[in-house]
Image (cartoon, rainbow, N blue to C red; front, side):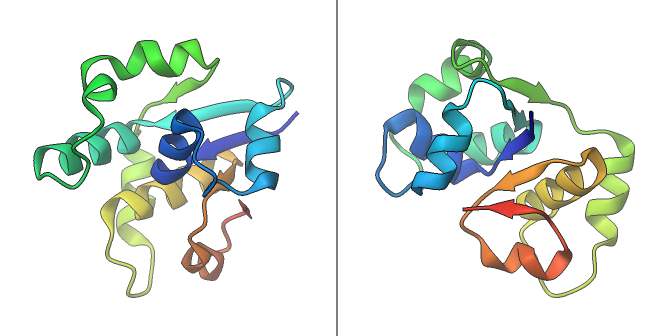
Length: 129
């Protein structure tokens, strides 16, 4: 069993059945033996992008993300103080606060991050795509 943390785009593509989600990612997420986690940072990113008009079609997620992720058998991953410390301390030019949080959580919790973001590889994050 593996613990997998979904990047925001991976969650959205999984829920939409989007072919942009790679087959290895789709297989890992669909494997019931894996534990799938959704970060509080993902909820924050979805709500932020909805508010500013970048994700206009996610009203159902905004209305009840908890129920939607539970219906998929996924688990919520809260943000701890340690997650915040590590995310804020990561070196390098990567400025996206949501990505920094996901990287910190994946590293600290020993999770594989499901993401197409190759920039994560520079940080030693275990990534599947």
